[in-house]
Length: 377
Ligand code: ADP
Ligand code: MG
Image (cartoon, rainbow, N blue to C red; front, side):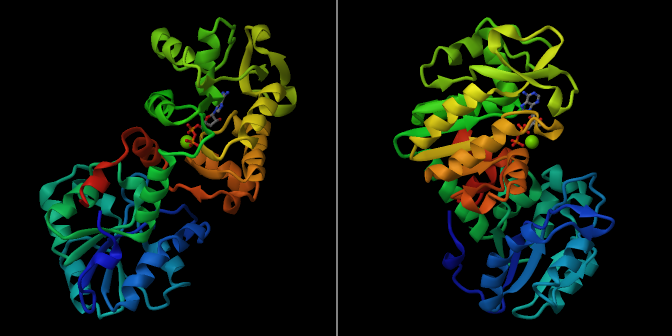
C-alpha cells in the first residue's frame, strides 16, 4: 500500500480524495465537527503541496442526503472550500476544471448515484476521470465493494490517505499483541463477531466474550438465560469456543425483566436467572475478574459494550473503560456503540487508538485486510 509521500507530483495535480465527511446532521446542521477534523490532515497535506483537491464522500442514510451541511461545517477550517451539488455531470466537471492549485472542492453524496453501491464500472470510470490520482482516506467503507472504494483504483494510481494508513498500522499491530494480551469482544452482532473471536484466539492470550454475545455461551454452559437476547447460533460452534482455555465468559450478571430501567436490575449468579428476566450487563464479580486481567495485560483490544447500555445498564462497560485506561496497556478499541460509551465518559483520548472502522474494523481483524485496502496495492 502506497502513502501520500509516494505520490510523485502534486503541484497542480487533480487529486480525488475519498474523504470521511459522513457525520451526523440534525435540522440541516452538522451536530459536531469533531469527526470532520479527522479528515483535515490529508486535505492539508495535499493543499500545502498545491494539489487541486476534489473530495468525494458518502452519507449513510437513504441515499438522497446532501453533503451541503458538511460543506458549511468545513468552512470553519477551510474558509474558501467549494461545493458542487453534482457528482459526475457537467456541473461537476466544470467545477473541477475551474479548481486552482491549493483549492478544495466537495462533490455531492456518492450514494445519490446507484452506481456507487452497485459497484458500477462505468460510474467508477467517470469518477476516476475527474482526477489524476486517487487517495482513499475513509477506512470505514473499505470493507465495501463499492465503485468509490474498489472501482476507482482500477483506473487511477491509488494511495492510502493518512487516516487509512494509521488504521491499517494500528489494526495490523493489534493482530500481533504484546504478551500478556487480552481481547474483549462484546455487544450484539454474533455473526459478524464470531469470525473475529476465532481469529484473535490465534494470537491473544485471553479472549473475554461479553454482552449479548456471552448469552449464547452462558446458555451452552448449562445455565438458564430466561428472556435474554441470544443469537440462535448452533450449539456446536459455541461449544467449541467454550472449550478453548483462552475464552473467558462472565461468572455473574445483572438481570431485570426485559425493557426494565437500570434501577430494576439485580445482581445474580448465572444459575439463578428467572424465566422472565434478561441478562442485561455483566455482574460485579465479572467486572472485578475482568479488571484484574486488564491490569496485568500489555495489549488490550476491545470491541462492543458489555451490557444494554442504552437502557442504563452501563456499569460493566464503564468499569471496563476505566480499567483499561488505568492499566497503561496499549489499548485499541472500536465499534460505534463502544465509542459512544467511551466518549460519554470523556475517556476517548486516553486510549492508544480508537478505530473509525465499525464493520471495517471487525472485517480487518478477521481477515487481516479489506477489499478497499487490496485495491490500493
Ligand atoms: P459496537 O457498535 O460497539 O460494535 P454492537 O453494535 O455489536 O457494538 O452492540 C451494541 C449493542 O449491544 C447495544 O445496542 C447494546 O444494548 C447491546 N447489548 C450489549 N449487551 C447486551 C445484553 N446483555 N442484552 C441486550 N443487548 C445487549
Ligand atoms: Mg453497533
